[in-house]
Image (cartoon, rainbow, N blue to C red; front, top):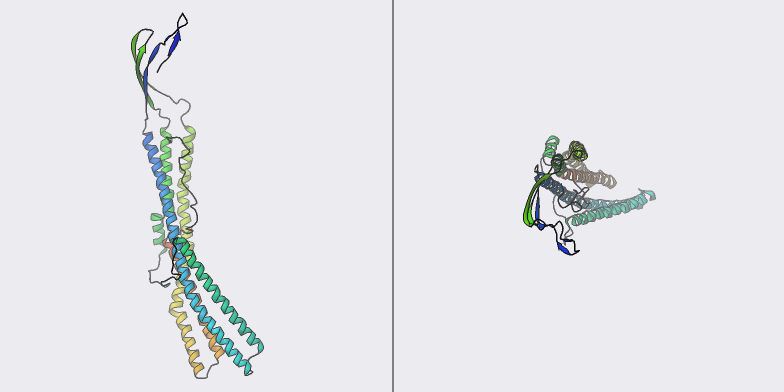
Length: 362
């Protein structure tokens, strides 16, 4: 450094200044401020990692859910085709009865309307299957040549227990681990703000030549700023408030998970009960009733219209069974996947970056 490079003498000529030399200054950061700041931003990175895990679960759950829907709609398409065949048989039977004077023209019109309705229901089921397939392909993000879904909608997995699932949520749910990681970040932030008023130490030293006294000189200084009035009170109070808020956010997330799990578990348990009853009692009884009607028709003890009515009732029960299977698998997937879905939606929250802050943020 140089206090004066040139000065004018009495003869108004430029001469060398009083002091020229070099001075070095070093700031010594106290109270582990740099380590605390590093820990704070590492914790923020962990929060971002849990947010990425949430998004991964959302995509995987959506793929599974729409895969189950696709399998269900595939089975429904088969049932609808059988119903269409039954409606066609009903039209033929009604026309024959009308020719014999055993049915009215209104019966014939109603049979034709029921046939067209069965065709529309089949088209709707086929459209539902195509939608489910395309949704799965969209979520996977990879073109698939084969336009069919293979697999079984029925499963033999053990029933889910509510308390076991809830305990797993409290221990492993990504959305809960994320807010807990954010809580740790707020604790570190408060610690950092409490350390901020502790002054850093500045050490300065240098040497040079004094042209006025014509001798070399050296200097050594140690100094620090004393925060008499500004003791970072505002930032400390803000950090304390953020910490209290985040503690409440952790509790709120736990309660929200319990509430949403209770709703999904209600739907899962209801569907499970229906599936078990339809599989063990209702469908076998309806199937047996349909067979009895067929046997009675073959022995001329029952007319074909009654057989078709029992057949339609049996098919409707099969449709209800498949719909309950779809609901069961969807809610089972949600419960096992921490209730996360919406894989193609952008994350609702992103941790704040530090591209717009100082080079050494605290």
